[in-house]
Image (cartoon, rainbow, N blue to C red; front, side, top):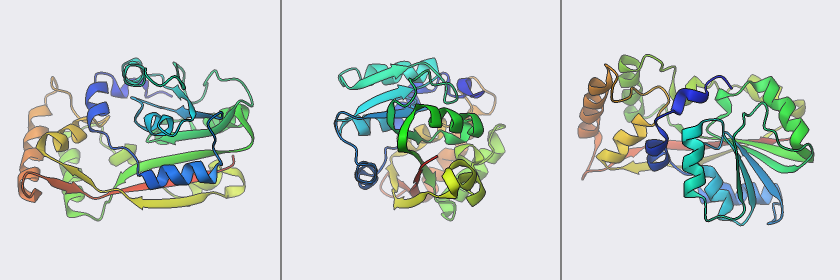
Length: 251
């Protein structure tokens, strides 16, 4: 995973402003994979532990695999009270986990950073027979006027912006080549996000492509976002249309 450093110095803001996933989705994940308390979920690219926490809250064993030191340490600190959590410094393509040891692999908001072929081989190695991989994203609804305007600001001020979520192309070809025989279950959940100004700004600044405070475009980025918030907010709140998308299957 060549993008290990993309979120360095952003762990605090990422942990604070990145959204969690709908409870309805977590229910589905546990039901579809028949997860029980003694089983093990490997959360790959676990970041600051947002998704790991939701799994841990259901009483499952979770191994967080994260190469970025800042983000991994944030997860270790925030999840230290969960005895079922184990943190590992490793990449998606080389998790260092034992072969045939995992009941489910989850990837929340990170698959687009991986070497897909190498990650698939690693999943086949660490998963128990017939166990699944779950890929999930919280994605902005690109039909929303607010989201479109937000994207235009990013295009103007963020040199590394290639589209939200790393510019992932959620095409059938991508998932057909990853999942066994091109078979997977797709689920979609509405997961709109409500932010005050601080939260809206923080959500934008937590992105991998967002300028840092020392960068030349930082002030312009913040100014344009402030204008956008002023235009679309009501009573100090703005609603960002957000969709949770999940892909689940054997590999």
